[in-house]
Image (cartoon, rainbow, N blue to C red; front, top):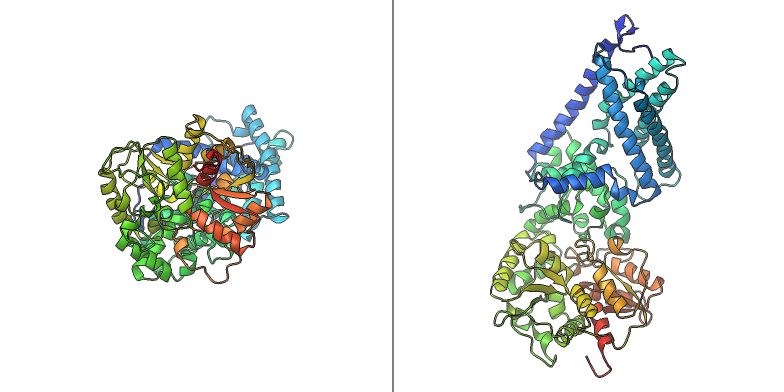
Length: 624
């Protein structure tokens, strides 16, 4: 290939034109990026510069390895191929650019290095094949909620032109130098045009996504810093706003959102899309009244905080922190569902959402046949943090009592805090009541400090998550009851006498599964009971939410809902042939028992807590 940088074009050497094009492209690119940076710098600060090793590992797995996308098999593999083709071609472009801008450099063009040219050619063919797969998916078999915008077509076309121009130039380099030189210019002009266009495009995520992953929340469903809430652009944190720039509008969040698919007002994709518009808007006042105006209150309250959207998002956008930030503003304004407001009032006044005297918290212990120690008065191995629903709701009493009897039977030393226990505050925090959460946490921390124990045990995944991840300074091991049962069964401290020879399907509670990755212990327990465990199509990290989280168990159902998440879930359980739907969360138990009635599945599907099944299996027919 003759040197395109020294060949004359309209009387000027090529490198002069290249300098003009490069400076213009970078100026246009830089002007837009600087505006985005100014917007982010004007937002509230948030520290995402910590734990560099963890961030590097996450970046390696999710950006370089595209782990979340590869799990989707063929389209994920195609995306990985496009990504690495793009990376190598970007490297080749900058090599060409430096060589063209400085023609006297004693450096060959990348195509003139045999092994580099061969690698670029192979990746070009691979990248074009992957682009064809992506195009077929996008235009012939698009998944629900994938954004089919003209902008997306332009981006796909530009990437294809980048690969084609370089690939064609490589193959004609020796046989047709003039054509090769022309294709070099096509390649360089396309990439520089791509660079200038990208920050103005809705596909800015091609540049923003790696940064979005690097600065991701390292705690699942992380809670935003304490604030009075956000209503306008500058009141959100820079990382919350950055989610808008990183969004690929792929619709994966909508496809897994229980609120959206049940007919609630919320669309996680459109939420982030509106944040993108908020960041892109040239006028600061365009951000005023974003909360409650651009994003309606019914959208904000629709979220169950199940974390499915964040768990599936390939660029690690943070929908839940955004919604909690907006909920804080609505709570401060008193724009709260009446039932939710009553529950929050009860939490502040009584320490439980039921509005019941704290002295009644241990009423479930009556009739056990033995006394449950007060961990504040005598040392125990396990401090059992029972939780509100397991303590007060009569529908969960059999499961709570079964747990106590099983632990007593196994000789496990455990105690409770009696009236000193308060609600853990997990759901209060996710409704936007940060101050209430902090008050509950402080009271619980004081009560726990008065107890003598080795480990904390809980039957409530919401409580488990709060104690394990959101109570400051606690290094005490926190276990869910299914983990304890798994160990006790494994060492024969409780023995199966009456196997559960029934088809059982297990529902993964969001705060036990997706939030804390406890999937195996409950299934191990069921298998040790000799149950025939069948899986629902959506299980483990893909499990469907029951709809209770984020304070929803305290709210009225919204008008126009097609089918509540719990109803969808019990239908799924029945469809897989199970006779028993087992769960390990008191809220799930309540939600599913109600859903079985409303879906007409009574007599066909029995909803049981895992502890009840263990108690049934270890019974010898003379009681447990």
